Length: 289
Length: 248
Image (cartoon, rainbow over the protein chains, first blue to last red):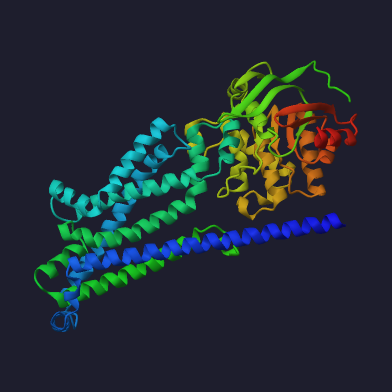
């Protein structure tokens, strides 16, 4: 009996020590974070002085900004011609994104299988990982510029840029998904005499299907947004129109185009989310956090 | 302590050593398993049971020693005969495929790459799958996805997939865990009947000594990477196993 009491006391004192230890270490971490935040703030203020940020908030600057916006941007130009041009360009961006996502996905799938460390030996996966990383290093805008130089102005170059960029990004998403698959199914099928190709066909693709579909939808949403940027270098779509309106100071038409873009992105985000929900894990909603 | 007769060896392991990243997992393993027998490998967690399994399956190579199944190495046995049925600890079923598709995967070893890429299995394989679905009482679930099944039903699908390979050797890693007594009885009767019917050799990893004694012919006790004893199930007293299991 006395032994029991002694044991409980020891356990109790141990847990107290560990709680004290934890609270001390948390406090010291918070203290270090405080210092880091203060030092970063000082550095940012110094850099802002260097860029003369405070001038923005001077009375003359602010009033000129307000008068410029109120006289040039509002009300938006809603004439039928402007709206027709915007609708055409917006549709072109969506078409570019669709084709770019489609071909990007088709190209990324074999590459991601070759880049996955659990499916291929290191001497095969490493070069393909480097290739995909190289493609991702170049922003979509630069890809668009390269294709405009090679194939001329227009949506064709923009679509190619989106396809290549999609391949680099989706490839990474996909090989990371493949590498996260449980090894047991592989072992079971391998023991049953399945070849590598058969394990890819019957384990890799079905087991990652939901995530792959979700990633493709995400990439399509991303490409619609990216498609509006790459137009600035002449690669077609709504971006081309935005750059035109800016160059010719047609700011009221620019606002209309931006409103169209905003509504389109919201609709695509909503629809994408709805489609993704249908491919989510059945047990996802049952999870208790 | 009764010892097992070592004649008529089907699986033969001699002086097997294995390790991973410099850590020794198995040490001097010597074991003989007879054709058509049901063997349970029991031992505490981390004893090296799964490593021993993977060596028999040909998924891992021992650092030293010799292993043969039916006179050839596990890799040759698997490639030549393709008749191993394996049920991993977490079953290794494909969640997004239906019950029937999962079972048909057991026939991949005898299906060409092109045919399997197009999901074309032979008529014989489809018929055999129907037969197995009926015998394991999961015919009504054939078009359902794995995620909608209960624990016991999932185990039956994993057994069906293994049976689909027409196995000479069935290896199951702790597949009776999480099942109640009634389901253990159902599942083990299926395995025992199949073993008797086809002279199939069965090796199970089992935690529970009582279950192992009830359903197997011999028990191999593994602890700290070594075999501490091989016993015939119908002749050994549970207290002797307990003694070796806990006090060695």
